[in-house]
Length: 314
Image (tube, rainbow, N blue to C red; front, side):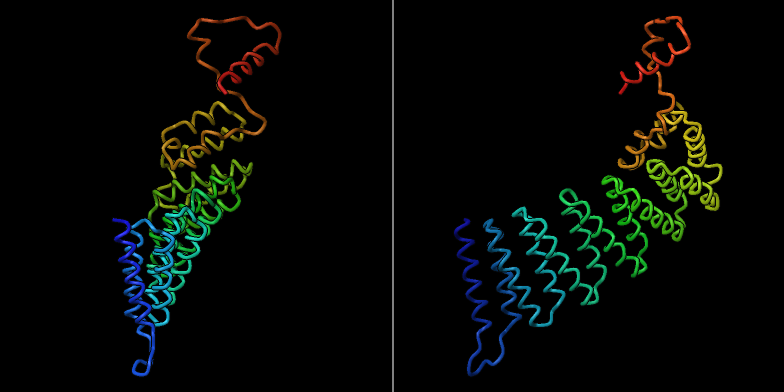
């Protein structure tokens, strides 16, 4: 079966070369017919699992379409060549071709297709190169924003923000989350603005910037419905506990469903949040269950017992 497909592909390549030849009665190459034959050859190679040859055929198809000024079809062929590189586990090279395709889509006047191509490239490289994925998602969001498709833009900004948090690039994450929040305000999705305020506060506190965290909450009072909401109350409790260095209360707030069921990257920030200096650790319930109660000997005894149980929990 594979051998049959390879022979079929080679026949299409021969036809494509014939379409490009010129002579006494044929002054110009037939790029359109050549591109069609290269496409058929690429598909046959792909079906035969000959991905390297399929990639080359798609690239020759793209070149033929470029020569014929058919940029949209050329971009599609570049994308297909990128997918062949993906099958060969050559992800950076695949992303490079998809980026090239997105530029052609923009040049052709189809920005939506360009943005979707950039998003696909981001997904492709996300687990290998987070920095590159962030850049691609931000580029895609920018294209959608220019087209005033804010819902699509803000979704991609959200992906970029979460990756920045995961990579611990918190200063950049702050900027990205703020842009998300402002965009959600613009489309009047106020409940999501509340969630973005929680994300902002968590990132700021992990940056040890209590003042900026408090400012985020203060500024959010102007968002319709935020004041008095569950999110607002929880954030006020969290900031008070953090300011009082009460690790016990911080743990309780951050372990509530409101924080635990956020996007995974923000939930991890909540569960790992520690007040400056360590604060008061959460005591293990084991001591009360086992009925263990020892009188304190000296003022330092209870602190030592707390530290011992805290160490056990970690």
